Length: 165
Image 1 (cartoon, rainbow, N blue to C red):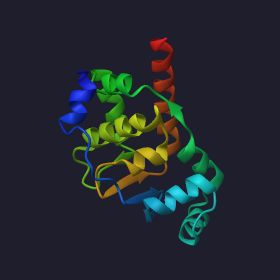
Image 2 (cartoon, rainbow, N blue to C red; image 1 turned 30 degrees about the vertical axis):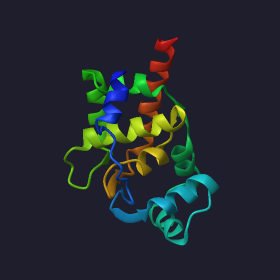
Image 3 (cartoon, helix red, strand yellow; image 1 turned 90 degrees about the vertical axis):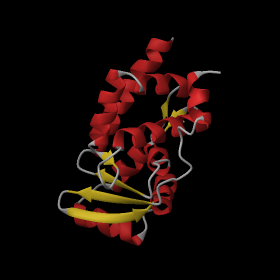
């Protein structure tokens, strides 16, 4: 049995999933439902509360929709292996400064679980999948740094794909 299979059978992935996102951007803070954000990611039409938030924060909805739905191809076994190395844990720690648990504790483990769970579904991840698969009821997101950290993750996983060839 592979290490990933053992990890999965051993309870490495929580059945709990995020229901809401506390999105912080500059001085603004908004709690959004995962369903609301999923609908926006899929269809590009923000709910009235999301539209109001975009206006107040002076955010471009198209940019957020593109980041939420951008697919990054990744082998789940390779991803799990990477995230369990020192460089992988450093990457998790950096991303956990932007996407984290409400308490700030166990963010590395929660993020690792969300990433691997997302990759298992279709050998690709999207930001909306990561948020949906986050194993706490709520997940906090630092909107100021979200696009940059997701691009960094994309770069690392693209490099991983090249190294696997």
